[in-house]
Length: 285
Image 1: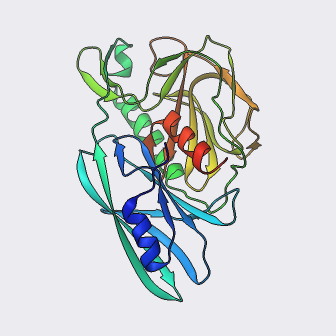
Image 2 (image 1 turned 180 degrees about the vertical axis):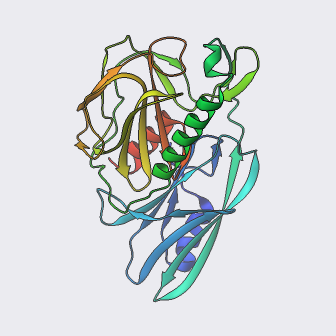
């Protein structure tokens, strides 16, 4: 449910800027959203939370509004935070501060058994995995002003969810991690579709993720599709929502065939289903 921040409304009336926030409390691994009405003589710049800065973008379907997404790291501890909003009014620098709370997502725990070669890595595998991680992070940290999003997001396939985002994971009894996406049941060869319009920025086989496609939806939002068996798209190609991007598989570190579906916002891994619902309800109505 959309909530109007009381303090934000007071700020609006006192300082003539209109701010609306999706919620004043958010769990680790999830995303909050702030919306602004575009007003004469006001230019919004950025939103800062602690040491992290987030750009304010034009709403892709409503020229009267701007927005910022605030992704909260899975590793963020419960705490009271401050949101600093920087803008210019009549060319003068201004700042407004809003309260914000991070709460514990209380994610479940899973124990998984995978091939030991995917846990106890050789020197060569460590080098490969590290290289692929650096390449991916370079992509995720690239933020364009352009948005490809013109319609609400959809799921990449119609199937049962077998593992939710955020579940704490123990591989082979000791290697610990967390689930960075949502797993959908998918037999090898199941067609996978783009969840929204975008630009394919990666289509390759990787050590952990196996066959991987990453789509840039613009403004720092990326969707990811892992463990694929076939690609039907190439890096640099544009896709439309619903286009087949390839087939599901069981490549990479897996316990069986499925689709691992995830999102990055501003470089941060976030709950993909919560993010899509947030954007659909607030930005792409």
